[in-house]
Length: 264
Image 1 (tube, rainbow, N blue to C red):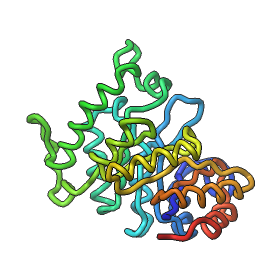
Image 2 (cartoon, rainbow, N blue to C red; image 1 turned 60 degrees about the vertical axis):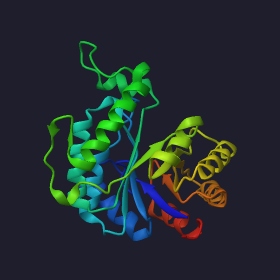
Image 3 (cartoon, rainbow, N blue to C red; image 1 turned 90 degrees about the vertical axis):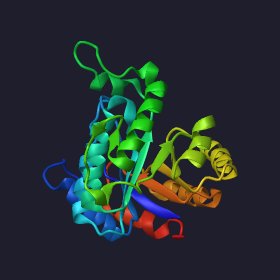
Image 4 (cartoon, rainbow, N blue to C red; image 1 turned 30 degrees about the vertical axis):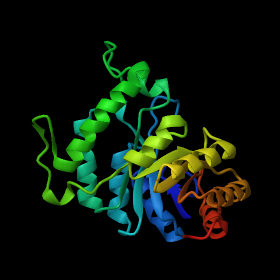
């Protein structure tokens, strides 16, 4: 199993965020031995996380090409797909081919409320699934060819094509679609317990799914329970796991890396 870690904007070792926080965390997480760095997408929930693509661009500039960079996951319905594609292609220019672009329809109404305009115009939380379907096709087109229905981004030839999407979710058709329509599947370790994840990954494999990633594995003061869960998830067959330490310390993260599942 490959182990990844979240960039939350919290400095490793305490203190408040400030200039250089994300760059420093990215460097230190790579030095500890994490194989991928991830940013989550949440707004309007009473706390702030870094803008996903901006944070990953910062991380790309200070880490080696061996470290993958993932969104777990980017909510398409609250954004303009052309803008997302422009930013993703710009990230790819800086990072090279190591971006894991996880996308989903969103799960929390607060995110949609925060991004709505004052007159109430904006993405509807209740229409998010239909909007996601339309935007997914649009995003794929922009990332593959640089254009969609006559609209052109005119990207550098080196960044178009070859960037596959990862789909989120752990229920029903989302797992099956991730297996058949995407490069892989991203499941949240917060919303699903181990039994639900075991059933979902078995379904993912039955449908021919390639890469299975479980994210949002919360780390407490004692990392022991997280380490134990990582071993259970590795035994289930997950290819990657991403830990999230809200108040990260180098000692705690190093212990997770040292005592977690062996790399495959």
